Length: 339
Image (cartoon, rainbow, N blue to C red; front, side, top):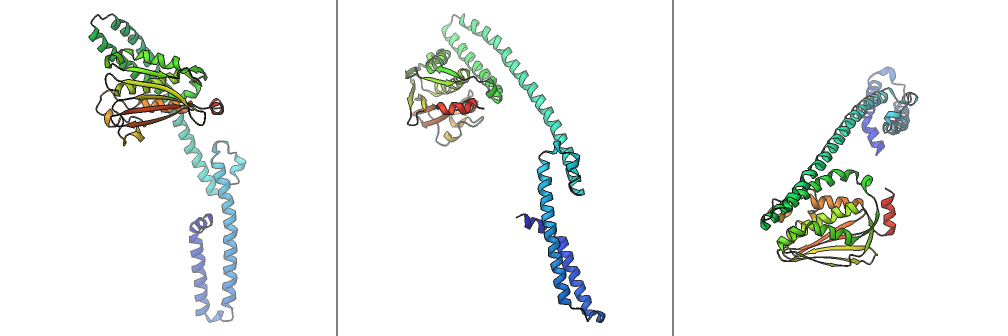
């Protein structure tokens, strides 16, 4: 492959040698003064010399190319002594590449600084929004009209979930620095999240059936709570009124702990199922609701992946959905700790 590239690169040389040889042969044929010279011998010697020259240039230039490309990846550390080993054209190329790399590094650093400033500003804004939300929660609890209080609590919950998604979306890029693996009892996390959705569940008449939640896992409690929150909010949102959500655990054949969330709601269209974890994908049913952002499951899967947790989904249209969290086993936790 490299030899073919070399021939393409040097086709002008080869063509020139061929024309020169043709011209000399015509000259030998037309000029009687060269009649005593063996053109066959001359052609053989010339072709052999040309082939030897091309072979020599091939090995020299391929070594030079390998040296050039090898140093290109370390352009900033490339010393002046190494620079002298390049050909004049390669040295010129290399100098231009260095200028472009330096310019791009400056632009990249400026973009990183701006992104960091924007991220910090966004985090500060989210935290500032929590203060009026907390005050609003206290005010809502004092509303005497039950129906009005429930409506306000539902709208408060929507706002709280959206802010929570934005907060974790911003932190997701640095989740490896933010997480802390510890022993967590599933019951403590899941029951806490269920209590957060209590008003919403009461309004829709949704109950919970739980089984085996005394199981213990090693994970980050805060990020696990966020993952459970996204799955539960989806299950409640798409469940029918006066239905149940089943939460249970089991151990599969490979000793992984599985945590199941099963609802009996609208379900997911078969064509939507492979795409539900894509960013901003709301699906057929999600488009019918202004509350759907398409971010919850995307963020949940990304957070779960960083913790070594796999999320799987099964669904039947108009029969409900089942989301499963598959926790890593002991040796897989070691890989997570090594990140």
